[in-house]
Length: 131
Length: 410
Image (cartoon, rainbow over all chains, first blue to last red; front, top):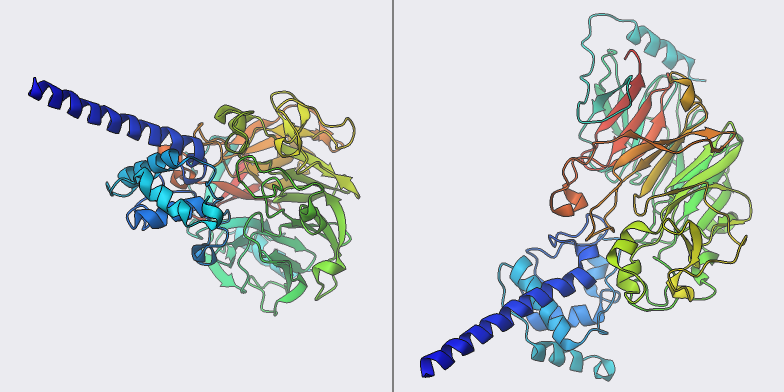
C-alpha cells in the first residue's frame, strides 16, 4: 500500500514535470521563439543567441529580473550589436515565466537548474511598485 | 569619362585561352540563364554597383571592396578593400561612387582606370541619429544627382512600448517627424546635415530597396512590412496570420506621398489596407479609402526586400525590358512557421506599372534552412546591380558570394 502511494506520488511528480516542460516549451513558442528562434540561436544582427550563453546558465534570479524588465535600459544593450531590443515581459504571470525560464535553461543551458515560481516572485518584488 | 578604363576592359575581354568561371548549379534560373560565381569571401556583403567596364563595388558590414576581373575568365582576381565606410548603400553616379552607412552618405571621386578610389572620402550628408532598428541609410540618385535617402523607422509599429504585447500606438506617431520616410538632398553639395534635407515621402517603415527608375523618371521602393502581429495582439492574430498577412509593399514614391505606416498595413489575405491593431484595428477593419495608396504589388510577408534594380532589357529577352528585379533577403520573423523569401524575383512592368505577375527569377540560395533559423541559410541575396552587358549581379550576405547571371552565351 505504502509502495503504491509512493509510486503514485512519483508518477504525479513526473507528470507535473512533463507538463511543466511542455508548458514551458509552448509558452516559449508563444512569446520568445519568433525572435530567439526554435534553436535559441537568435538571428544574426537582429536578436542575440541565448543558447549556451550566461543568461541560461547563470543566476536564475538575474535571468528572471532581465525578462521582467527587458533590455531597454540594460547594461547589455550598450554592448549588444543586435538591432532589436527585448521588451519587458512583466505582464506574464509568475508561473508562466517560471515555466519558460525552466524550459530555456533545460534546453539551451545544458540542463541548468529549473526556475521556481518563488524565484520569479522574488525578482518581481524588486521591481518599482513590486510588479 | 572613364574611357581609358573601358578600353583596358575590352582588351582583356578579347584575350583568349582563359578558362571561364564555373556555373553555380545551386541556383535555379529560367531557361537560357546561367549563374557564375564572380567571387566569394567578403563576409556580410550588402549592396553592390557595377561600372561600365565591369568593375564591381561592394558595400558590406566589413567595409568597402572593389573587384576586377583582369583576365576575362569571369572571376574577380583583384580584390581591393578601400575606404572606411561600413554599411549597405553603394551607387555610381557619373565619376562618383556614393556609399552610405547608418548615419550618413558619402562619395569618392573615381579617376580614369583606377579600381579603388584614391581620392579622399567626401561627406554629402551626415549626422543621422545612431539607431539600431532599420538604420541602414540606403539611397537612390536621380539623373540630375538628387539624393533620396531612406530613413527607416527605429520601431516596429510606433507602439508606446516598442514590440511589447498590447501596447497601443502613439497617435500621431512622433517618429515620423525624423524617420519612417524618404528625405531628399542635393547630391552634389557637401557636409549637409539631416536638417538640410526635405521630407519627400512618409509612412515608410523601412525601404532598404529604393531605386530611381531612369526610364520613368520616378522613385520606387519595396518596403519592409511590420512584424509580430500574433505576439503583440494574440487575441486578434495567430502565428500563421503573422507569417502570411503583412505584405512587403512595392510602391512608386511620389513627392508628398504617405504610404500608411504605422497606422495601417496591407493585408495579403484580404487584399485590403487594414488598420493596424495598435491603432484600433481588429484584423479586418479597413483603412479609410484613398488615404494611402494601394501597393503596385503586394509581396508575401517578411520576405525582406533588400534591393531593387530596373532593367532596360539589354542582353535579356524582350519580356524583361523595363521590369524590376527584387532581392528578397528572406524572413526571420515567420517563425515558428517555415521561413520564406531567400530569392530574387522579376516583376514585369510596362510604363512603370505591373504588366503581369512576378516570377521567381533566381532561387536555391538558402538550401535547407536547418532548425528554421536564417543563420543556417547557405546564402541570402541582399544586393543587385545590372552590368554593362545587361547581366544581373547578385550579392549574398552570408559568405559574401557575388554571382553574375547572364542570358545566352556567357
